[in-house]
Image 1 (cartoon, rainbow, N blue to C red):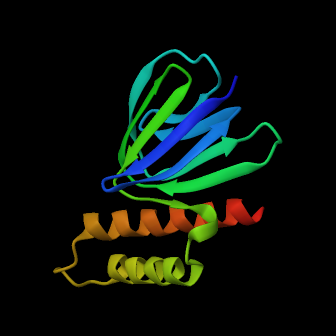
Image 2: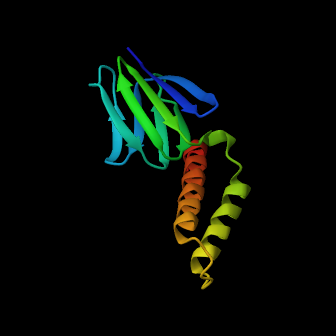
Length: 136
C-alpha cells in the first residue's frame, strides 16, 4: 500500500505522488513516512521532500516553510513555496545564493540580516534539490 504525497502552495497543487517512502523536513528534523504511519502534524522547515517510489526511482522537491500533516496513508504538505527538483533554474538559484552571501558579508547597516539568511537558505535548498534530482 503506497503513501500519497499532496504537495501544495497557496494557489495550486504542485504534485501528487504515490510513494513507498516520503521524507519531509520538519522543525524537529527530517521525518520519514511509511505506509500506515501514525497521524501527525508538524511545522515544515526549508528543505527537501523526497519520495521513493515502488520502482526505487525518486522525486525530490525543494520546499520552504509551511506545515505537513500525515493521516490515512496521505501526506499533505502545505508550503509557502515548492519546486520540483527537475524544474529548478540552477543559474537563477546560484545568482540568488551569490546575492544573499554578498548582503550577509557587506557592512551595510541597511541590510536585513534575517531576510538575507532566509534567502541564502532557500537558494541552497533549491540547489541541493536540483543536485539530488540529477543524482549528484
